[in-house]
Amino acid sequence: MAFTLKKIVEDLKNLEDMTMQCMKCGICQSVCPLYEKDVFEPSVSRGKISLVESIYEGRIDKTAGVLKYLDYCILCGRCKRYCPSSVKTDEIFVKAKATLRKINKLPAYQKALLKTAIEKPKLVESFEPLISAGMKIASSKVKSDIRKLKFPVPKNMASIKPKPFTSLFGGLNKAKNERMRVIFYPGCAISYIYTNWGEAIVKTLNHFGVSVYVPKTNKCCGIPAATMGEMELYEKMVNENLNWFESIKDADYIITACPTCQWGLSDLGARIAKRTIETPMIDIVVFLSDVLNIKIEANNTENSTLHIPCHYDHTKDSSLINFIQDNVSTQMKPLNNQSCCGFGGTFNLKHPKDSREVGNPKIEEIKQGKFDTLYTPCPGCAMQLTDLTVDANCNINVKHPIETLYEQIKGETNG
Image (cartoon, rainbow, N blue to C red; front, side, top):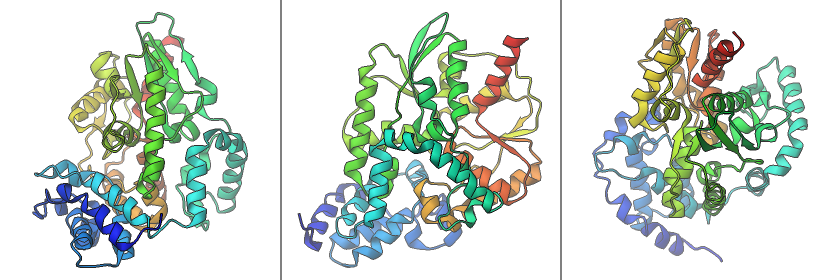
C-alpha cells in the first residue's frame, strides 16, 4: 500500500486524544537528559509533541524533519514519569515514529539486520561463537577501544560469549527443596553478554527453593524494533513472548533482570499489543526482597554506590536500596546524580557522542566518591557505565547486585 502525506496525517490524527493531554507546561524540560544537554525545544517531549501536532494540523509537511527529532530520544520515560497530566509520551513517540516510517523507511540493510537479529534468534545463536571471536579480535586490534571501529558499539559487545545463557540453562532448573516455580526471562544482553548474571540468578533462586524455567532460545522483547519505528515487528515479539509465558502453567512469577525488557513486555507492550497476562512480572531484586524476604548478613565492605535505571519500577526503589544495604554491601552509599546514564539501546548506536555526553556528569561524582563498585540492575546501564568509567580512567567494577549476593551464598555453602 502506498502511503501519502494525506494518509500519514490521518494516522497521526489518531494520536490526538493523547497529544491533547499535553498542556505544554514545560515540566518535561526539567527532567529530560537531552534538553539539559542541548537546551533545544525539539529535544524535549513538549517540542516533539508540538511537531507531531503540526503535521496533522497541516502546519508543516516535512515529515523527515519531524522523524529526525522523534528519533533523537533516549525513551528514558522521565517525561512520562513526572508529567502532571500523565501524558503517555513513550506511546506517542513510538507510534508517531512508526507512522512516519511508512514514508521515510529504514535503509534496507538496517531493516534486514533488525529482522534477522530479532526474528531468528536460533540463527544468531549459531553464529555466536564466530561473533564472539571476531569481536575480541576487532577490539584487540584497536587496543580494547572498540569505539575506534567504523561501527561504534559499546565495548562490552566485545564480551559476547561463545555460548548463550539459554543453551546452558534452558528448560526447568529444579530446586532441591522446591517452594515455588518461576519463569526467568533473560533478554538479549544476559543471553549473549552477561551470562554470569543469568547463572547467578538461577542458582541463587535454586538455593532458596525456587525452581526456574528458562527459555531454551531467548526471543527479544522487541524494544529495538519499537525504537526504530517497526511496530509490527515489536508487537509480534511481545505476543510471542507472552504466548510462551502463558504456556507455563505452574509459574507464580516472571522474573526479569532488565528493566527495559520488563517495560517493553508488561507496560508499553501491554498498551501496544492490547494484552496483559495474569502472571506478575517482577525484577529479581524486588522478588528476593519483597516476595522471598531474603535476609543474608552482608559481608562485602567495599565502598559501593548504586545507579537506578530509568525503566526500573520506581515504586520499588526503596526495596532495591534497602536490599543492597542489608544483604549485599555494608558500605553502599547513595549516588546523588540519579539522572539517565544515556544508553537508550539503539540511541547509543545512532548517537554515540550524545549518549556519552548525557552520562558523563554522573561519572564525575563516581570518580570523586572513589567507589570500588558501582551496582546497577540493568545490563544496558552496565554496558554504558562500564564504557564511561573506562573512558574516564575510573577504576571501578560495574556489577549487578545479584553477582555479589551469589558470591556470598557460594562462600557460605563452601564454608
